[in-house]
Image 1 (cartoon, rainbow over the protein chains, first blue to last red):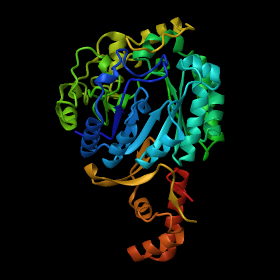
Image 2: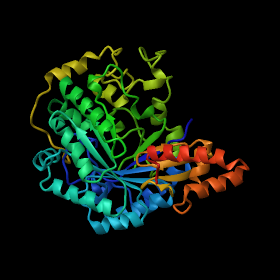
Image 3: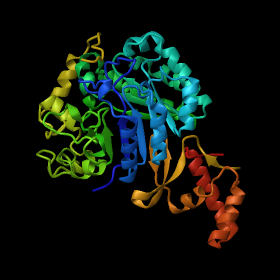
Image 4: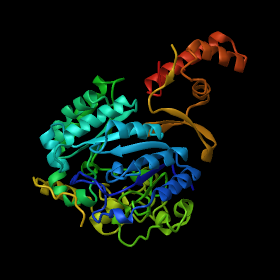
Length: 355
Length: 85
């Protein structure tokens, strides 16, 4: 069994934004159930000991935790490369300075659209865009590298060229253009978010042209949407292969959305070591490797390339987490995706909220 | 030219896998032996000539051969965003 390379630490589900495609579960964890500073420090030590090299400090909004500086310090002390994934609206110059002094290596800042009105409608927070622009400046002034993360979908894809301009204007060295993936909140808002084929093709054209024009100035990563694909994505590089996530309340997960699958019981850092969770837990071993695969994945030439696609998507769309991901053209359920695309076109969102 | 690590990039000893690895914003790569020998000498003080001197001595190899390799590798590492000049 290979050791994990990266840990996603979902420090909290609290967030001032209410994005309708939030990757957090639909059932959000309240602040009172969150791990303590000391518990996170132990998680980081254990993660480094089993082979993790990078930690992504995420949420919710990770800076909503009052102990975020101590948490960054603990991750850095464990020897992990620390990446803060933030909406930026709670950052100021003093906090950035303290985070850098604590050992922060990199900041990924989200942006919801190019113009303030669109961004603030999608994110559900007034005044957010101006604060994000300031946050980018604080990151730059602290001498930290900045990645801008733009989640794109039906209602903001026409802004993509201007999002590239913003990445340059705000001083980002990298831009991640990530099409929405449809689990949890995004699945609830699928009709409002799914792009048309023409939108996708235009976005791909814009990304390729911008990469060429901005070579040496801006690196652009591109995450494609699998609803228009014939082959599924190699989700997480395979279940329990290279990646683990820890939820705000300490559940150890093979991916951040794994709790959406019914019937799996996840180990918790309050009563299990990270090593035992990774190596021995039923949840991590359930879809590891290829032995679990039914047809058409079993024996397929692509089985060790795409690992059958995404377990959460298979469960969400077919009710069976062991089914071939419907994004694969070989899945008997592949037609579900074309149906969803044909039905899309809603204009209103159901915003993320605590239930 | 005095190479230094780009912001957010560093060389890290990966104990679990007994190797050196370059960690960078949301990516990582394993340097080959030549790249590693150079990266271990990048300190923001040594310029390319000093790195060549160091390696020529370390490997008891002709300086001009080492110089060609080092210049090509530094150029490649700059293009990949790991180093700045």
